[in-house]
Image 1 (spheres, rainbow, N blue to C red):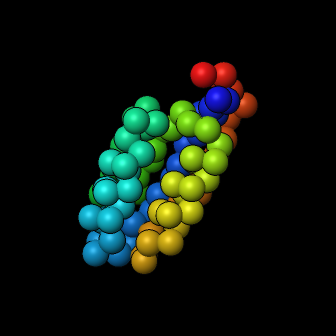
Image 2: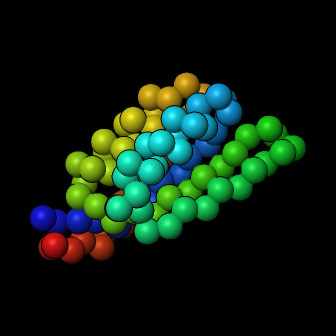
Image 3: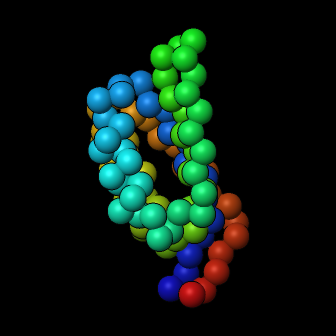
Length: 85
């Protein structure tokens, strides 16, 4: 199975959706390389970045599920780094 490395940028504007976001990230935890969360108190938002190594369909599925959460936006940048596992 071919995997790709990608980075997801997530902006959380609605903190009511944070629990569901964390549940999704936990479900996909085996693919996640690392995660960083930054609270931006001056704007009352949170910024989360996720580094992930997974098949492209898994990355797309996670991104789509996150994007469907109320008050959360996500963008994914794919690297050219691929691996056959």
